[in-house]
Amino acid sequence: MKNLLLGNGINIQFGGIAYSSNFIMKRIKYRAKLDSYKRLFGNRLTGSEIVNLLENFVGEGNKIRDGEYDTFAIDIDTTDALKDFKNRYDSLIENPYDIMLEDWFFVVHMFFLKNIDLEENRQLAVQGFEYLILDAIFNSGKIQEIYKGMKENKKVGRFFQSFDNIYTLNYDNNIENLTHKEVYHLHGDFSVLTNSENEKNVLGYIRRNAGETVVLDDMIHCFCNALLSYSGKLKYKIISDNHRLIMESETFANRYADEVEFKKQVEKLKEEKPLEYKMIMTKILHPELNMATEYHFDSFSKIKNELYIIGISPNNDAHIFDAILNNKSLSKIIFYYYDERDRMFIENHFPKELFQCEKVNTLWAALDCKVKTYNCNYNLAIKDFEKFIDIFNALSDDAVTKETIVKKINQIPKFEMQRLCKLVKEDMNKRNPNHSTTSEKEFLQQNASISYIALQEGVVPSVLYMICIMNFEYIKN
Image (cartoon, rainbow, N blue to C red):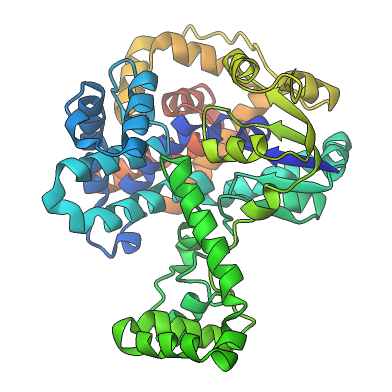
């Protein structure tokens, strides 16, 4: 059997740096500035408050680095995570996008350990960060379209279709759309609602009938069953608890009918824990419903023969590699690495007779899907070039150096510049079809929208502003 395990490196390879942690986190800021999160947070938080919250938590991240939170790490999991955080963030954290996606949940965790009087707000805070990060990953649905480019290369399609079982840590559905095969999502799936909102699950069914579901149709991806956490152990606990509950629930009907003691226990819950009672009885009456979300980890832990791993760092999600190392039915593991540090980690920590490291770029070359690079060498002798850069950095609120702007511009071919300018023009016409004078708020939102377009497309915002100046004939009416 040939098995495949995929991570976010796949999305970056075929979708570009728009799906890097840096760009994902930056998108949150501009979506907030566009007031896209008002309904998601029940109109309790403004866009400016969300941006300020992220910036304030950068300070908390630096306090964690500096040891100000050390005394609050009293359990082994938190202590291990604290040590890991300090090792990886060995220099000053300056911006929200400097903190990796799931590390945000560790910063939040430590904040509430220190501020125990705010503990009642923990769940809402964690849920809020989940919403923001999931929306930024979703990228206004563009992430679900990556497969369209993959389909153009038949070698890529044949490669992915050659596997008997495909597992992924990603939430998107590109591989199933490419291969038309079932893909098992170990950490959740944008197309599957979370347990409490999914009417195919017992709890979701109960809440739907009671009119208690809270899903917003235009933000439905934020209510998916994704697992987000700073700790692989915490993810594994949810995964294993869910699987155990699913297995146990299949016997509820027979036990309720045949076992007097079990029936007494269930009836006792009616007064003590009415929701648990209702869930058990609903499962008995509706056996077609799922008792919880299945994350397919039990299936993954029992795969046989060969496993190919692409787009994953061995330093993340320890529960995944623990399952691999504990699986005696695997005879060969091909680990495709991008970073030499990942290769060294594998070779130094995992059995050499089992793991074989291969450069992922070699694979992409064999599949004829290496990312094209350009060196356009444009004439950038623009009058007051430095002043333009200062203005664009101010407009985008994402300052970069002149050298970075020049380098990035020369990596974008003319046809791509025209496409980007078309996106900007369409957005400007949509926001201001009559080209009338705008208010300050409208002006700021237009700037945020242009920056968001840039980050959606994997372009630095100030670079997109400069592209628009260089190609103004495609912007003007």
